[in-house]
Image (cartoon, rainbow, N blue to C red):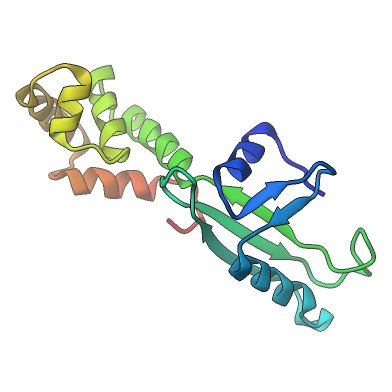
Length: 173
């Protein structure tokens, strides 16, 4: 059965691999993911806990969702008389957005500078940022230089690397 908050249900709906049926059960349409889950559940009880990661394609073509499958060691039969498996979905885009906000707070960036960092993390080019903000590319470049000064970064890729490092600890990017 699915124990999920509205954000998790939204992530499930965002991928073609998973859905929740009318009985509240998780359905899997991705054969590779299903095979991986079967292998984990069919493993010997003495094998102990197991963790596997898989990325799930989004319907909208955005960053793929990350699925972490966890099977605890054998504990006497699980909820329904068999082994249990927990699937945790995370949205890397949300992790990056949160990390970008933390980066901006850490370096005390202005609102305009924070918008530029968010747009860079979102994959926009300088020209696209200028167009979306109805400003010139020179204005965006000037604000970007201020971001470099405040953060100690020298290139856009440095900003992205700093933000990526600030994503949730212990989770692969």
